[in-house]
Image 1 (cartoon, one colour):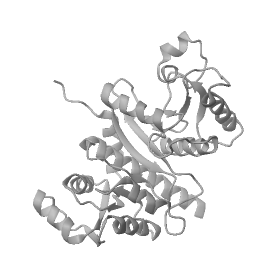
Image 2 (cartoon, one colour; image 1 turned 90 degrees about the vertical axis):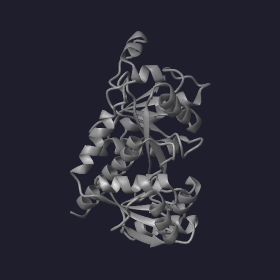
Image 3 (tube, helix red, strand yellow; image 1 turned 180 degrees about the vertical axis):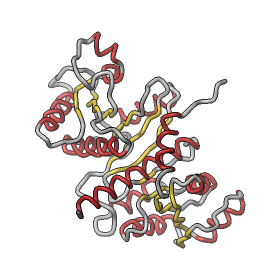
Length: 314
């Protein structure tokens, strides 16, 4: 069996290797997978890990599994909740430019992130993006939101779409093509997602969403396959060549992402956007290339954010 290639992820990782490592607070890396993944990303120069959690336990896990953590900053925190809050505090203080989830629950780190007074909220809503490496597609495809917002309103979708466009810019897409997905490509009053898709496209025309080219509603086949778009006689610069797929709700997005992963042999790097710093939500099921790609994507987002802040100061 031929080994799966990851050329698209490899290109992202190579871009990051030319940059200084990004300081990253790793919240509660208390198992082999989370600690080893963070240190591997550190060893190839993607991140500068700051390990946050019970010091004695992290050191014991490192010894048990032969993971080298020498020279790595270790910030003691007694439990997973304290580790999440401490990692968020490091980001607020400017000591790190990205966060990574260790072996704690996603809810724990996100609870610390969204706290009104001590968290990392901004004017943006927080949303999640999968950066999909699909073998049959010649580019990475961003799917959002498949993990954070369950039933997003139209206002939520403005933020979801803008976060995804900004991510595409950080990855090198100057004018990403954004498909607002539904079950059909015509507007149907009985299908709310078609009306919201049309509204989002009009908002982009009016400058309420910037930096990308939007079209919708589009069914999935019309969004990613030029042949399908031609059969339906859809004339659009987005149809058949979308860089970003905005889904109607979390259920649709989650099923789309997992279908691509398990039925089309895709890899799915993941990142949370809309907070002060990007957040990597790793899973024990993630492959090594996926873990490294998630770190690379977050590092590129942190770099773009840093450059935007520098421009604002000038």
